[in-house]
Image (tube, rainbow, N blue to C red):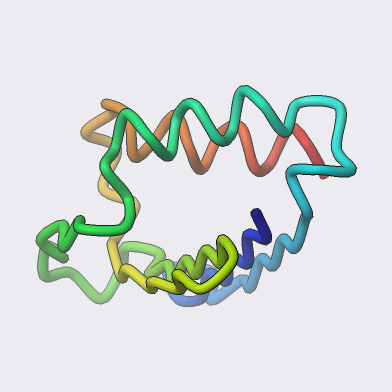
Length: 91
């Protein structure tokens, strides 16, 4: 699987970007398991309103499947935050 994650916005207006291929990454299996738990390819998480919150665009390609979700990092935790945390720590 190929994962591309881009963030922008928030108070500081900082941008983050992560690109990785799970087949070639040491924690690739963990990321794939987390994406399965999120049911990523059918997910459409709500995007809370708030200009001060970072906005994420996450695209995952797996063979013929390609899906993009948009979310805001609002500090609510859960599996979506775990995905963002894992992407950051894997860079």
